[in-house]
Picture (cartoon, rainbow, N blue to C red):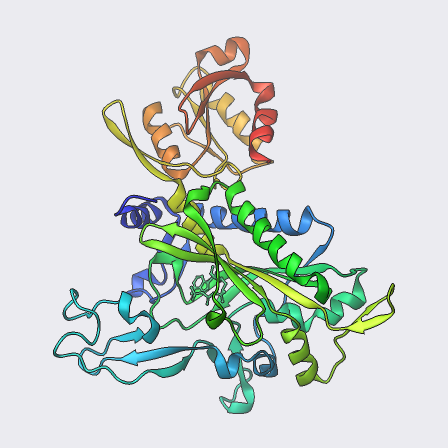
Length: 443
Ligand code: ATP
């Protein structure tokens, strides 16, 4: 588990180095929104790309989709979100604070932080009432109920409503999945813990359709596959766990749900939910749309509604988990070195290129290497200050390799490669740099 205080240090590093800034900051901010800076946008994109590659590109049973954020309102009536996507909300009439009823035990009274809301004499808590988490807006110029639409709170429904389109326009055969990455919006009552719970975030979801009789097996397979994915990108097994929901926690249609949880600096938190949703979604959309959403099996000549397994992961929440896992401080030669030990696959900048000094043709040689590598990866050229300081700056950004051009480069066409984690330095030929990086950046 990360050291206490790691979250505060991480938030500060993220701001200082351009990973994540508070949303709308110069106007006092907007609670629950975050902006991803130059390094953060690369990290987030690398996480999404790794997910897409491993689940879509590298498999032959999953196809991709990018559906609209705004959807016909009936979608959310069919899915049950309009009625039931609610959290229980409690207000305090004395201090005007709001709490999620199911999180009172983890919340502090704003006026008396040593007590929970309701325990301080001045607290005046209301009864819990249902609060719908979907953001409402209107299409067209008239703000009337017939024009109501919602900002999607998940990407899943876009995949269900396109099930027939995908079946009709591709050669998919059961079992197969549809995958989608995109923004989701939830009007969270208490956004908190940095980017862990925000009001606008990104999801990476798969709807994996299969025959009902194979669904339990697929449910288990997806639990293992998704757990292994986080490990392959650097999250330690001891910081991950799979929590199977008890029967009482399940939605009425669910045949099983489990969460992959990560040990964040404040404790265990959900990274991804894997749900066996039976045929609930397709049957609801079939009912509300009046369209036949059954699948025809060529071999058995049967027509039926497939079952679905849904691994739903938060891309922005995963970003926080990877950052927490990567963050380390260590003593090196009497100084504290802050380093982000991100998997090279996720690191925002893959290599930094330095001339040892700004003379004797070193900047030109270093720049030529930099320009060559830029064709393939985000790399960074830096000639300012002592080389030790330049290493430290790259350590904080998570850059796995630094390449230094020095006096020897002109003589034997080699550069020094300094590795972020071990800090070891070796020499390799300029001609080998690209292959050296390919071997280490592609798993
Ligand atoms: P929670 O219990 O934390 O509110 P949930 O069970 O409602 O989450 P799901 O609906 O299963 O979450 O969403 C799938 C994934 O989306 C979660 O595992 C999480 O990674 C991510 N996620 C959900 N809500 C948020 C949020 N407000 N901010 C960032 N990520 C989120």
